[in-house]
Length: 169
Image (cartoon, rainbow, N blue to C red; front, side, top):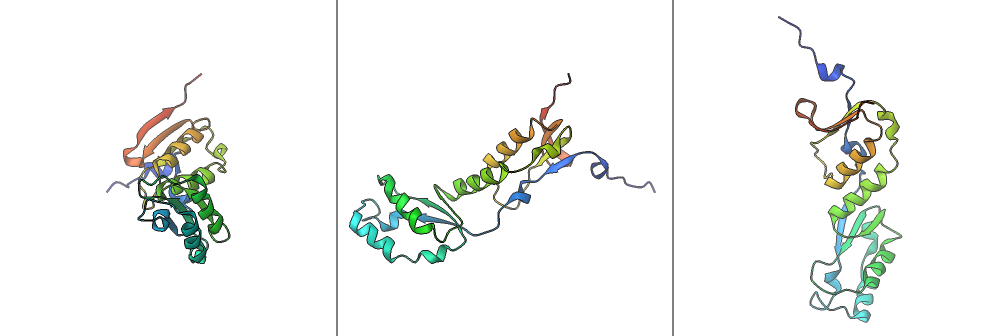
């Protein structure tokens, strides 16, 4: 019987797995419509009272997205005021959805990666993930790898889609 050789393991192919950069911690979304009259009308005095009485410590060490799920017209200061309340407890606070939060976390993390380690190498950006990796993270990783990598593919080694190949000079 002929020995099976793992050509992928023996190749120079580098795998860039975005799950490796996934920051651990709870994600939560705060919907400020809960503090609006009938979910639509912001009455400043009532809004401030709701914020004063809210248990902000429950967000300790969490990543928090602030949004409004209704079509209410909410002044900018309302979300900022919520963020001020969260600041002593939350690890990170953004205005938007949980998906926006994930993208923001990845933007921050991927901006600190040393992509020079991928210089002149074929790279595959791993496509399947068990964690919520937003599309924006794949785009950021790929565009940051491009100046360094010899080639970039997306997916798995057995079925990768070519994305970029360096021009031979």
